[in-house]
Amino acid sequence: MNKVYDNKAWLLILPMLALVAFSAIIPLMTVVNYSVQDVFDANTRFFTGTEWFAQMLNDPTLQSALLRQFAFSLTVLAIQVPLGIGIALLMPKKGWQASAVLILVTLPLLIPWNVVGSIWQIFTRGDIGLMGWSLRELGYEYNITRSAVDAWGTIIIMDVWHWTPLIALLCYSGLRSIPEAYYQAARIDRASKWSVFRFIQLPKLTNVLVIGVLLRFMHSFMIYAEPFVLTGGGPGSSTTFLSQSLTTMAIGQQDLGPSAAFSLIYFLIILLVSWVFYTAIMNMQKDKEEGA
Image 1 (spheres, one colour):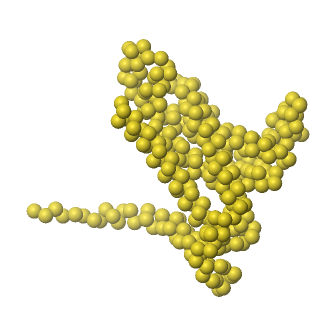
Image 2 (cartoon, rainbow, N blue to C red):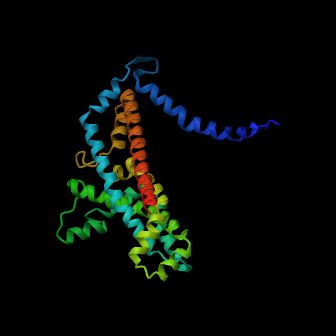
Image 3 (cartoon, rainbow, N blue to C red):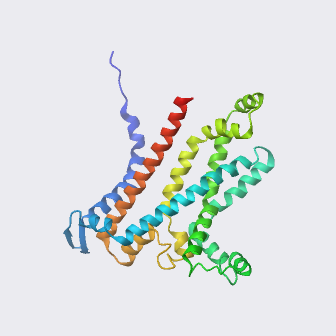
């Protein structure tokens, strides 16, 4: 007897497909269309092929912004991942203390990006900001509008303050999912805290860490509002990241063709690096499981 398939269930996902097409595919195809054209106005366009892509890839300004972007993303990841794991390990497991700490840890995530930039702009001012004033009182001439080192350090600290809670919350949920039997077995074997972390907690956190690293990498690679409000991309172009360069080109200069090509290159870089991160972490986990 032949099995009868009911394909009516596919109708249920049509609204989702329509939403994805409206929000992602159609805009993406529009950008692809612009990336191969020289647009003068709504009715005057010329086909340019891959000319804009070649121009963007050879643009020294964008190459500098790309290197700056990688340096920023890798730096904040190197700080946020171990710091987030450490915070999660220290967070209470039960009782009202757990709820109170969860709320406190979550607070930075609730603040909008542009507000975070405004908060830190005021916080770092040498005349009225607590951080800027304190550093000056200690003898350090702190000035994010004149010193690239100060601007870079402040943006990294701001990002760590804003987004480390995300890693901490993901790790906390991963730690809470570890069965108590694992800890009981470790206590019976008189395992040290380091051994418990290395052989029980860290392997169990791999999946949430993959999610956390990918989310943070993608977001850090798209950072825009915070440095724009805090430093405006300066001093010079020391804190001008890819998103700011793209916005300047697309909106400030109205170069639609080059900015469309830039957007696609930007998208492909994020996609490629995310895939490399995911594959590397999953292969490490697989090797550990096979070696165990």
